[in-house]
Image 1 (tube, rainbow, N blue to C red):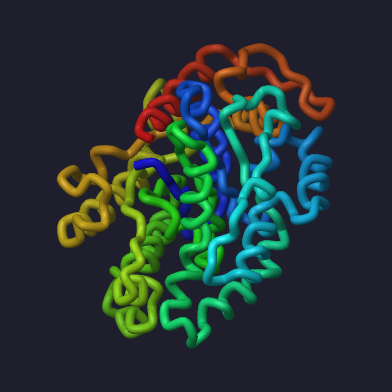
Image 2: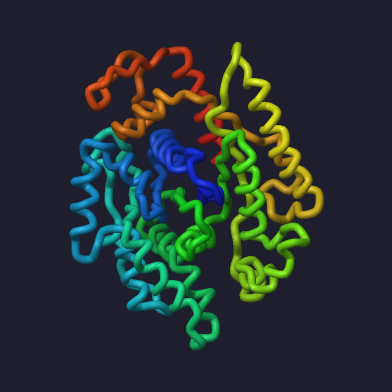
Length: 344
């Protein structure tokens, strides 16, 4: 697979930070590959981090959104609203190189920046998808971000490409655009029951697999229409148990108890619906990746836009506050995230 959507139908699970880690570390380890981040979240969190964090990202976002056309994902989608059923000839105006704003980012990492205008134009996108002519209007509109990935592959020429797509927790039309553009879905979650429900919603919304109480709504679901119109949807690729509490070198019993229920849920779905998984022969629970909680490292990396491979132990000054990164937990954190990146 060469394109991954990061999504859970629940916010606050660390999705955007994991996008940042995946893109920056993969780009660092594979200098001959162009890594494209497509930020389909109106809050533009992954864009802010890639553009340098709290010091440089506000100015960078202003510069990109002030261009004509806007050098953002919303700028591209605005262009598609004007040309809904014919791909535009040049996508380079909507692309930026984070390294120009944040020198710590590898030069082979490119960004289609997030933009709060995305929320504002979403209704126009939805209405365009509902046009009666052409008869495949819905399928064509839902493929706009997929069209972008095709164009960016051409833009990269003979170089390999990897796409990391950050999706909003909601199942808004722009989230659907991102999912259709991906081959695999990476699902981060935390050890709580709301995360389990979020994952169940992912399965229901993407594949129409749900309980008898919601079967009635399957008749008008995204999953049903995608199947009818021949629109490919991504497979479930990786489950990331994020912010795992470690006690005496092992995950805490409280975490393990909740994590076990989430694994059981996914294994139960796997028994009847193997076709929705990227690796249908393997039990989902066997490939869960656990990322230990290390809040300090996450905060330092996010606020300063520092990739893991450039994050060193020691004291840091963050917005006037002293933050200490200790070697042992930082190394444990880095190794767990390396395991995740190696799955891509």
